[in-house]
Length: 243
Image (cartoon, rainbow, N blue to C red):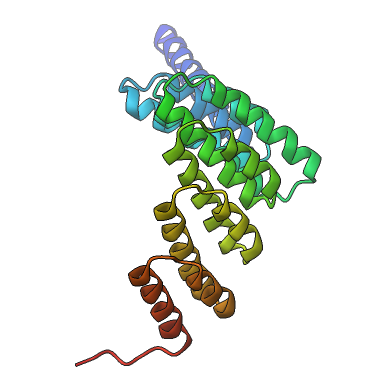
């Protein structure tokens, strides 16, 4: 009887010990760092490469969103796929840009992102990473930084794309003058026409109708210009759907 009682006590003690250990592994909802640490631990155990990289990407974006730039940057090195590295750089850059930091802090942050981008040895992914950095700089209001980043790209088509993407971000902010400067740096007429058409549409959708009209008039292709002008008029005074 005594042996049975002693065995029962030992079982209860063992159960409480295991339960306590399990509880100790849990995180309080107010402790985001605890949860992020758990995600980082779990990420390393994900077997499929694409899923593991995706988990790391989202983790890095969250760390950046929380203001932990160095923590976010450290995650990039754990990602294998170069395209996912570029996308992670984009996510970090846009999250940082949304923090409304002083210029000197932005300069330091984007310089650190550039260092990570320089480690990408896959040329197309590297170019995409630079495009994303330029977009983030534009989103943060750092037009000069965005133009410099785009100018560093050697591939003509990708550089033109970077200037176009930067112009779109600037148009989203309602900064048509900056958007025009970005587009003016595009050497290709077809790329410029596309950029002005897109910027005109963005400006119109945001209620900047005069600037949208001005952008449309800068399109040098008759068909594309007419289409852009028509879009502005339709935003200004929507037509009834034809029956």
